Image 1: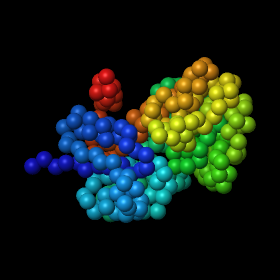
Image 2: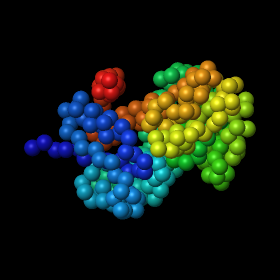
Image 3: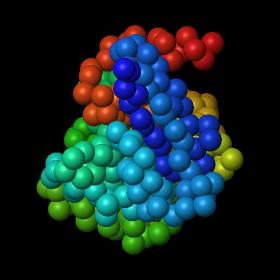
Image 4: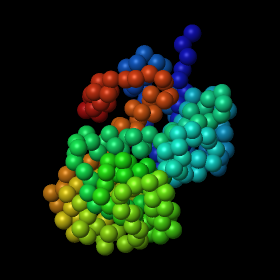
Amino acid sequence: MTTTLKLGLIGDNIVQSQSPHLHETAGRLSGVEVSYERLIPRDLGLTFEETFAKARGDGYRGINVTYPYKERVTEHVTVKDPSIRAIGSVNTVIFSEEGPLGFNTDYSGFIKAYRAVRGDAAPGTVCMIGAGGVGKAVGFGLVGLGAKAIRCVDLDLAKAQALADALIAAGTDTQITVSDNPVASAQGADGLVNCTPLGMANIGGSALPAEAMTKATWAFDAVYTPVETQFLQDAQRAGLTVISGYELFFGQGVDAWALFSGAEINHAALRRALQGDAT
């Protein structure tokens, strides 16, 4: 009897998410039958908590969690890794016999994405716009990569300060400052990072005007649907090295797959399969 690995994604605005395709393809390459459902609380007529409880009760092995629930879910899981507890954001949950366990593969996925494009080059001074769930993971990732300074930017200055406090409390030589002004914070920055939902399908826009990008060296956008966001298109035209949100999506996805399945997968083979399916 074949046992299906039952997985899902809880989030808003996830109709175009490629997570089902990634995990179902990983299953096919690994000889594992996978079902992966999009669970949108509003469409189900449920709250986030009710959707989470439904997934747990319906026999899901685990779920991914995306915007805007990555911080909210931390109240409902046990996070054993102290570094992930410090981040305060969870994007992957395993339903185990001891209860729901929380992980953050955005953190490891971002580091993979950065190194895949920029290698060992240091991030320098980074203007990071957006201090929510993915911003927390990316901020800790930038510290891990040895950023000289991080300017935490959010229109909600209290959120920016909370992230700055968490980064400082974790212990770092990286200079941490806060602001609610992305244009001013981009001045003199080496790296420009978007961790807001601006640019997503059905949302659009950009976290930073094109004229504010010209003096930077590199840019990263956490948004990956679409891959070619306005933010990255403007960065490319300004001559910056760009790191697409797809690279984060792929990196966090393969790390989540290992947690869900307990099996490693050939990353190059998975990438080729996903690219082949897209053509």
